[in-house]
Length: 370
Ligand code: HEC
Ligand code: HEC
Image: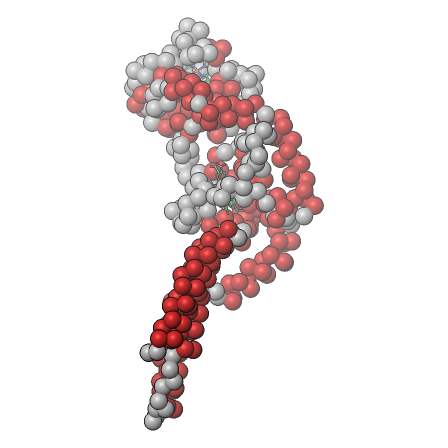
């Protein structure tokens, strides 16, 4: 190799060494995803090799050149085919089906009146909008595990689910610049869903419940739920349901014979179901539910099944349990949480309920126009 040639190679190597990090950094600053940035880097290397090849001395003419070309072509084809098969495939049939649903299916959904069919349509809409990318259902989907699992979401109030879907940033106070959180629930569904899809998705989400006999997942210790339960217990949500009138605001009975709520070792009454004649710290979820739903015969404790929805019964049970700490959350822990930044955020979010309801109604109006 001549001296001139080696100087030439060095010059090109230096350019490549400068170009490689520059391309990397510039593509980062321009916001290219990592895959693209790798691709650009590989291009730089390939271009460098190409220029080296240009400088290489000419080879002697080969005798069986045709065969070499054929072999190169064959090997290349095999390599490309293998790589192609290895990468994820887009099945045109599935993609077409998606587009079909986007156009005709969208309109159809709005007309579905049968509740079972509506739920099925909701599952379609859920798949169509690829909610599974971030949410797990029955252990499936959400490879990136960004959002909460939705298996038990049906216990939440319709308003809660609507707000989660239409105004997911509602809990962030106005003083904050509503950030574009990378892994947050997208805030464009009020623009994308049409009325039929929205109704169907809502029906579908409301139908998702794990068990009728179990406290909805996480609720025993969820401050938001416990605070809602407290409002029911104190008669704020509905003045005709006022547990505090007999059991006392802090669980210290104010009516003779009413259950002492603060003692986890207190047993259920003689008149109660067999399964509840044990210390309340040993009560199952179902014991709590039945105690409130059915009440205790021959006592002032009526069943609240008429006045309260099943969801509300779980909520008030979650609050009652904090009075004795029977299920892990205590009044002290709750107070300590409410002092934290997160706790203060929650309090201010709950206070704005009227405002939030207005906003959700407004967004629902937009959906009707989609
Ligand atoms: C980019 C990821 C992502 C996608 C896509 C997504 N979500 Fe979410 N979702 C989230 C995150 C993150 C949260 C938690 C938000 C929070 O806590 O503020 C969430 C919260 C929710 C909640 C409230 C759950 C709870 O337990 O409080 C519901 C309901 C929900 N999403 C439904 C949907 C539906 C329906 C779709 C499809 C139309 C969807 N999501 C698509 C990320 C996503
Ligand atoms: C009119 C008074 C009154 C009201 C209102 C009331 N209770 Fe009771 N509660 C009682 C009495 C009396 C008992 C029976 C106490 C006993 O024998 O242990 C009882 C028992 C209970 C028990 C234990 C049941 C058992 O099987 O041992 C629970 C739990 C309970 N109440 C929760 C509630 C909740 C939650 C509310 C509100 C939705 C409520 N109570 C409203 C009077 C009342």
